[in-house]
Image (cartoon, rainbow, N blue to C red; front, side, top):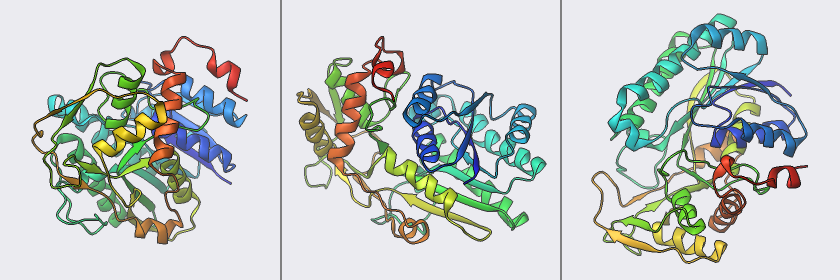
Length: 347
């Protein structure tokens, strides 16, 4: 097994990936500035796995600190999560997104060059496909972006592809996520939005727990089975396992792009009904007109990831809702909840 350097490892996907890496026998170093994450998440990962994580607080745009951390870690590979991810915020503050997501990736590549590291798994997004021109979306789909967040991911991807042309002995895996949801089955770690959730399931969960009055559903006249938008939701644990597979799969020097999704879509109303069953709560909701830029349906082709990584999403919508509700119910205010659940239940 190897040592893995994880930028942004204290975040939602990062903590779940660190947990799976530790359970697979890897040593993990986390580098995170904690701007949108909590140290408590990593502490709970350590309790679940009974394994320690070396944590280094730092910003991915700080070249000197990042290079020192990489040198100290003596890792064989890097998983790069660090960045900003809220689409709406990227529209109102695009420069922050270009700084964190593009300059941060540039800084990381330079630091990796400085210490001789050549294996990278990059956290990208299905937003690089823009509006779907065909379904399911495979990796050959034309690339585009409809918001600054998506454009920063696309620019970073282009930078990685250009970098590989200059350094063809590198191994770069670009993972394009669809819609990560759910939480670890322990209920100890999960998604902890700092402000208003940007995604459907955490918003529904906050309505179910009583933090919000109702769910606003934007559009019920799409050409879908029930009129609401359809998206490909993937359990965060399946997503995390995809990263472990990308690290472990012996591959030649290459730069590849892989979709991580389930290969099927669920509508807003399907997710709402499934969450009502999982939580035993009625979810008040109201329909509003479509939002500009929203598409009727978006879901992945995952054949390439299945072939190359020998990976497939295993958890269904019921699993996603049950696990997400367990996390929300036991941690109503996320990692800021005033409870002793972690100390009672972690082993």
